[in-house]
Image (cartoon, rainbow, N blue to C red):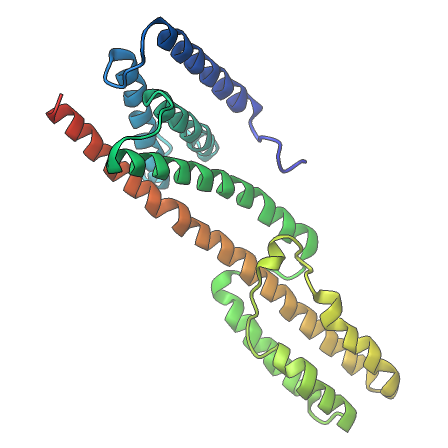
Length: 271
């Protein structure tokens, strides 16, 4: 529930008030006379939506703009979230909440819905994944450095297994070495950062009674190595999801902006 709470409640309240006023204006005007996207009111909502989308597209350039016009990264982010929601609403009001006509109308409508939904998913991911990592992982690693960390764990495990008993070497060759062979990403880490960890570590507890007292510390060290590797799997999976989200959200946003410009130019030429 903490994750669902907005960081800046004032932005939420202000945006909700604007949305309510816009819907009230649309209901009142459409009751007075049939709604037409080409009339003054319909064009006004379309223009405002276009302006909001244009500013939304400048979000990746906020550092180059030195924070202009919002002054800080936090305010830029809040506008990116709530401005995008208002833009989607104004697009719906501009069209009178009717089904689109023609391929261009459908493309604009579907892309608007896609960009808005993926944006909301991104907000959730940006809140959920860091909290998930902080609450359930001890190992921290950048995505690009994870293969290097894995290689170090492989070297440590080989050195630890060298000179051990036949039972320990067989356990290492059958259980640990395959688990350390490469990164094993899983979508399950998005729901449970410790997904499958107890099952993967259970063989260590079963092996311990069959080892002498002098080899049990070696077994514990090997268990720590495998635990770190499982945490690297989780780190890789979660960070890759965040990287994947940018491809799901950003290119469609750019395409939407291009089609929006085409729609505006076409409308002006054929008015």
